[in-house]
Picture 1 (cartoon, rainbow, N blue to C red):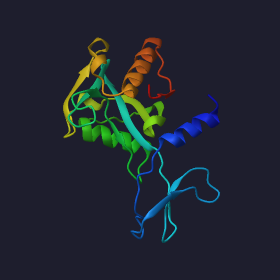
Picture 2 (cartoon, one colour):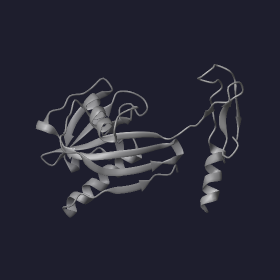
Picture 3 (tube, one colour):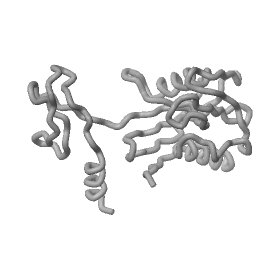
Picture 4 (tube, rainbow, N blue to C red):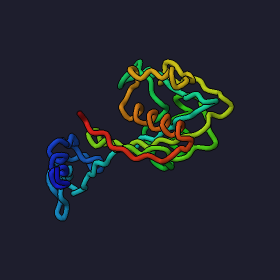
Length: 194
C-alpha cells in the first residue's frame, strides 16, 4: 500500500461529528479549507476552523523486585480486564507528568526514575501511547476509583488472555524480552486494526 493510499483510506474512514462552533455557537460545515488537504469543521458564521488531532495516552510500567504492577479496570472500556496505569494527557503537562499523574490516580503508585520505554501508534483510534518504565517507589500502591484491583505480578502470573488492550500486551512483551537481554531499550510500534 502506498503512503497516499493509506492517507486516503484514513480520510475516508474518519467522520467529523462536530455540528456547532465552540466560539460563537453557529452551525459548522464540513469542507476542505483553502490550502488544506482534508475536510474540517468550519464555522459558517465566524469562519473558525476546528482541527481534530490524535489523543496522547501516557503511562507507566512500574516494577518492584522483579514484579510488574498491573491494574484491573473498573470502568469501560474493557471493565474487568488488566492494564498498566495510563491515561489521556492533560493540557499544560509534560508526558512524564501525565504518566506519573495517571499512575498515582489509578494505582496510588509513585516512581522517581521513569524513562521513556515505548511509543505506539494506534491510527485506527487516533491515539498515540507513550509508556515509561521505572521502579515502584517503596513498593506501595492502592487502587484508585477507576480500578477494581491492583497487584504486583511475576512474569508467569501475567493474565495474558485478560489484558485490556493490545498496546498493553505489546508493552509487556517488549519489557520481558528486554529484561531477558539485560538491557531496557526504547521501542516504537504501530498497531493496526485487524
